[in-house]
Structures are given as structure tokens and as C-alpha cells.
Image 1 (cartoon, rainbow, N blue to C red):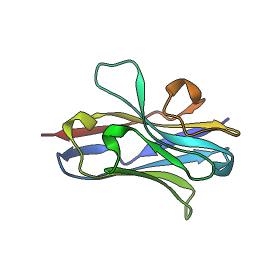
Image 2: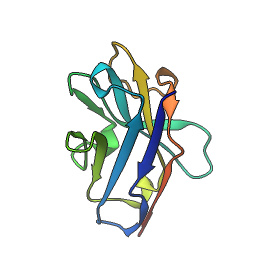
Image 3: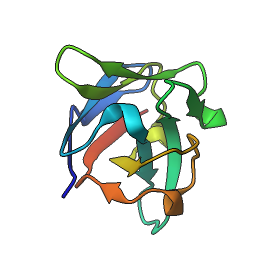
Length: 125
């Protein structure tokens, strides 16, 4: 069974930065899609933030384009989301997500099979 574990969340003031990491077990980073979704406070649905396919092509949500960078750390086999210029509206529970096989880096929650427990990000104004 695939297990995903996020880390790096916390509280930060607007304009600050955070680096989220996702470690995966029983999963081949080269043969599927991985990325980040977030659940806004009080909301049920998770919205796509940034996802990357097996060719390292990345899709970003418009509201984070230019501020967030999704990349793979080959040294320890983790997925990293570097978040800069954070805004209060970025406050959410952030989840690492993955799916196996040939896939496109979509930002659709229903396209992903495996999920981590989440890490909280809080951005104050």
C-alpha cells in the first residue's frame, strides 16, 4: 500500500515562505503523478495547488503561479513544494496526493488515489 507523509507546515506571516515535503513509500515517482492539494478552512473539497507528472511537467493553480514551485528532491526521494510570497488566502490543510501509471498532471481531486494525512499552513496578515 502506498503511504504518503507530509511535513513542513506551520504558521507564517504574509510574504513569508514555507517548504513542504512529501515522502512516499511503496511508490515509484517515475511512473505516476504526484502533487499537492489544499482544503480551505470550513470547506470539504480539496483544490489542486501543483502537480507533476512522470516527465516532470508541472501544472500550477493560477493563484499560486510564480509563487510556488513543485519539484522532486532526488537526494532523499521526496516531493517538495516551495511556497514563497505567502498570502492569507493560502491558509489551508495541504495534502500530498499521488496516482500510479501513465497520467497527466491534473488539478482534479478525483483523479488521485493516494493521500497523505495533511499538514497545516496558516498565513497571517
